[in-house]
Image 1 (tube, rainbow, N blue to C red):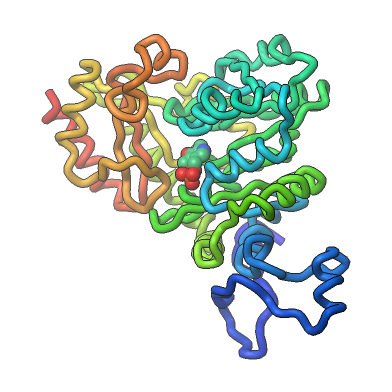
Image 2: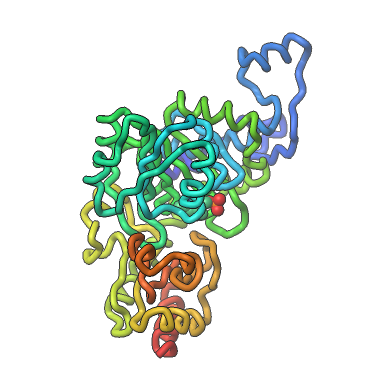
Length: 388
Ligand SMILES: *Cc1c(COP(=O)(O)O)cnc(C)c1O
């Protein structure tokens, strides 16, 4: 069946109450018929819920939906996107292993690579987003994983997933894609050769700024390792958050369609504004990787980045002049959010390091929400005038 139908009609079995909408199973554990039932369940001869750190009906429904959307064999749901990223690496990597990663990755993922994984003698080499051709030169005999995000944060660059998939296959490496910015509706990395796909469900999957969550889906043998690690270490998603997220998936397609429509209109408006140096949005013809974006994405996503003329000061003044949009660290909310990476999230980096990941001093990132696009354009327009 089609994406929207799967998103709405994938449900756990009804109870005797014949409820129409899936109920919430707030229970830490499940009961057994007798000693034999308990033995068979623990030895995994029987597939059933034992304890909600392992599985729970609500998390199972959420995972099953994401698997259908990403055309994945299996998955496991986590308390946050970062617990999905960390647990995936911790389950699959051994001391001495090596990762080849895109340079522009989510901030906490970068910290994981530079500060924490080295504690277990796991090292990382980086390639620039427009230098996928250099990936092969970074591969060493102990390389196990290629890791990337597309579109990237906050630069909104696009990475050629098909090329990465071919390199991973040729060298027998595990390709892991953080698909958070695209959502399963806009892009399915498994089709291009990814072995595992990670989502922070906190962003567009929830889409309403309410709950944290994460999920990893992909090849069944890899997910089995991730499951065994997670059932013993405890990063599981709460049943309540799983229930919220599974409901959110019912409206993912219709929401993301509108997010993308608003983003494209705002990007087109900004491109014509004299106070703006440049605009980056995957589905603008001026985007350096427009052709690749068209090949691998259904629509351009909800993130637009642009540069106001006048550097750091102009960026800060622009933020101060904003009236309707929120200044917040989140993204993928119904409410439009504006950030200035150079003075906030990436202020600790040197100018050169910032430029390596595509962040210039006057760069602003907008996460388009679902408000009327006329009101959003009016807010941006007045802020561009008043920042001068
Ligand atoms: C937010 C985000 C994460 C982390 O997710 P949390 O749910 O906040 O832990 C990971 N990757 C990307 C691309 C993100 O945007």
